[in-house]
View 1 (cartoon, rainbow, N blue to C red):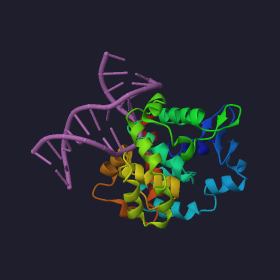
View 2: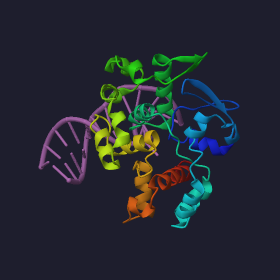
View 3: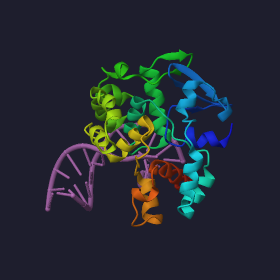
Amino acid sequence: MQDNLEIILCGGQTFSWTKEEDCYSAVLNGKVWRIKEFSDIKDEYLKNYFDLDFDYVSVREELKAKDEYLKEAIEQFPSLRILKQEPFIAMISFILSQNNNIKRIKLIYDKLSKNYGTEIEEGYYSFPTASQLKDVSVEDFNAMGTGFRSRYLVDAINKVEILDEIPTLLYEEAKERLMSIVGIGPKVADCILLFGFHRLEAFPLDVWMKKVMNTYYKGKDVSYFGSYPALAQQYLFSWIREKETN
DNA sequence: CACCAGGCCGTGC
DNA sequence: GCACGGCATGGT
């Protein structure tokens, strides 16, 4: 298992993957996947999921030339990619993420899968679909440990059709539309647009990125980072977390 | 025992 | 408009 996959699969952009003894596993698209390294990604579904056709090299070079912080971040995490997750999974995952930590988000993600998803192999469950969750009540969600986010989940599931509109909308319109769901604010909306719709103009500002902006990019904003601010965000997010938690 | 976590809502000004 | 407190819960 290489470190490269760790930052992508367990770094907070997805909660679908489980680190096992000798591989990373996930249930996606109705199938159990097990991978140890990039060369295991051969299936068409996974190739698309891992965004393997996008040319990260030139974007990395462009960002590295901007300043020393981006240069350091990119050199530390050169293999970072933005996964193409299912919109519904991304929406629920990032509603769960607020005022929460990665480990516990994953715990709830797995609990929802086990209780409301479909068992694909023994012990491996798909994340529930919107229709599998449509009759789940606030009290039911409370039993899953989602706490004050339970009512947000119910509202999101009731308004799931919004996700179908997103691809037709401009970034700002799409963000506003997502924010009409109770419990989705600017940051969660950006995460859904980025990880669920691959909108690379999104720029999720969480506590870590706010710290980065205040400390290293004072007076600057998203426009400083060029055409793909989401990539700059992802490198800097990983960089600052690594720096301050280890 | 505290305190914290990839924020947002509701209230008050 | 903007600042503030509160929030369920598991981990440390």
